[in-house]
Length: 182
Image (tube, rainbow, N blue to C red):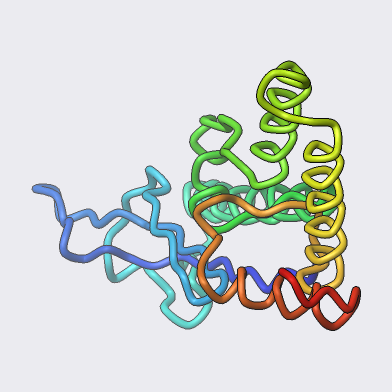
């Protein structure tokens, strides 16, 4: 999975405080979605270098602020790299939750499938026959193959599922496995 995450900083001039200082915000852009988050840094607007997205000057205070911004950018990229390496699906909200320290696991398609099959196993002979469970397991296998083939991922969040995903999965089954009864 290729990640094209863009990280930059900007001044939120609309939130100027009584001392004339404006907050520096972090912007993370990925898949045409944006995340804006305050960095906790406040500066004078005239000290901001718009082109370089940094504070102008060479004082120790300026050096410290620019170092904080660089560290935050590195942290975002580390989060993204870790998610990519682990094959976990993500979006800007996932990045925000991890940055905020709220890395609660979100519900994914494979997790729901695994939980459902586990429930089916418990009810085998009562509500489900072994043949039905095998068909569900086969569907999960095909979903896994589809995700690797189409999205180069191991899993997707449930909120990412839509009609387009289902249509592509159906076409995948018909094309790859000659399954005409999807």
